[in-house]
Image (cartoon, rainbow, N blue to C red):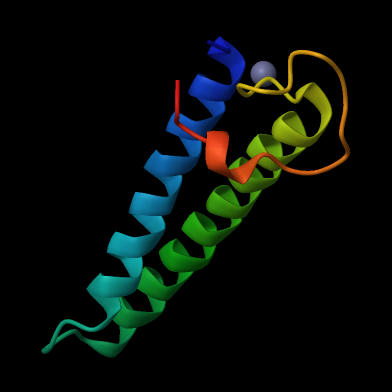
Length: 86
Ligand SMILES: [Zn+2]
């Protein structure tokens, strides 16, 4: 169990959820134009956070290779199937 990967995945999940909620919020009916612009700004901010969290998680998985089956060295690919598996 890699606590770093666990923490990074949690952070990505939280920021991705915020991104998703911000996107859904833009589709609500009856929003005034200036509120739309503010919410669009929040959406962009959430997108940047989400991207940063994704990159951190991806880099960790690439470089640490901490998933099951990767304890014996580096194989140069992302172990997608191991995300969240332990
Ligand atoms: Zn790790």
